[in-house]
Each structure stands twice: as C-alpha cells, then as structure tokens.
Image 1 (cartoon, helix red, strand yellow):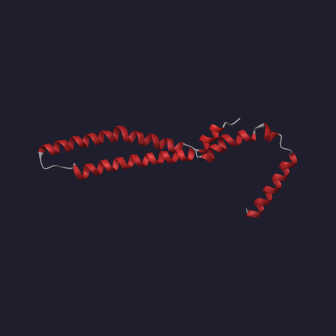
Image 2 (tube, rainbow, N blue to C red):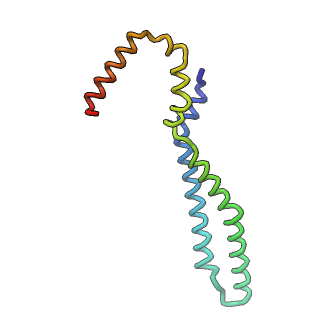
Image 3 (cartoon, rainbow, N blue to C red):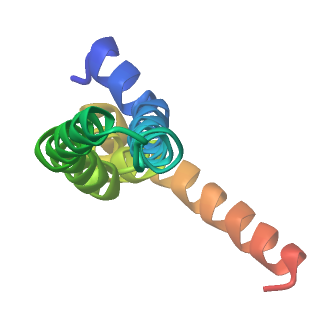
Length: 128
C-alpha cells in the first residue's frame, strides 16, 4: 500500500526542484557580486597598503568561489538535473502500485470493455 507520506513527497518533487534551481541562481548571483566587488572597489589602490589588502581580498574571494560556491553549484545542478518531476515519479512508482493492486484485479471485464470503447471514442473525437 502507498502511504500518504510517499504521495506527498512525490507530489512535492516539482517544488523541491524549483528550490534547487533557486539555489543555483543564488550561487551565480554570489559569484557575480563578488566579481563586481573586486572589479569596482578593490581593483587597485592608490597606496601600497591598499593594493596589498585588495590582493588579499581577491585571493580570499577566489578561494571562496573555488572551494565552496563552485562545488555546491555543481552538486545542486547534478541533483536538479536527475531529480524526476512529480508526473515522472507517479508513472514510475504510483501507477504500477495501483494497477497491480488487488482492487485493479477485481474490476469486471465488462467495465474494462466499456472503458476501452469510451477511450476509442475519445481518441476518434480528438482527431488523432
């Protein structure tokens, strides 16, 4: 039997994927902000001490981008790519459970014939 909790998480997969895409956008925005900050404010200073601090700041930003933001972005992108949508997961998990259940096996054959006739009429009516 399928639990309500399983159905809830399957139906929430699209929202979870949207959160992953939002996290990827935040990573890209953080990198852009850091690069713009370096470009406009710490590019070069008038004094030797300012240039030294600008260089340290650039190295620190580069370390943050390469060691934290880039791996997180790659991980989130891979998860978001391979996370199935709610409809895909329903086809993979829920529909086989329902069709193989004892309820589906007890459906009378006349009801199946009627459903097939209605489906055929619906397909002919749609022009396909």
